[in-house]
Image (cartoon, rainbow, N blue to C red):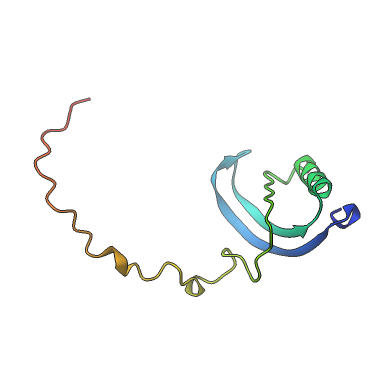
Length: 108
């Protein structure tokens, strides 16, 4: 359908079954799929329309980007390959100091 409307599929990733943040149509889990496409707007609109008509698709999200990133997405990378977080040693001992006498808590 994308190629029929003048677009190409650059890449796909299947992210697997994941727990959703909230229930959608009484479902707690869903299969997640990631598509990288290079297509004109009418092709994307047709893809979204057909996905919304399909009973198995609960949500569809399309985002326009200037250029696709190379390599796998963060979802597909192993945790040990993600070095951006570090070891969290930058937090220190998290001493909050003396918080003083805060008095009694108000009754409800």
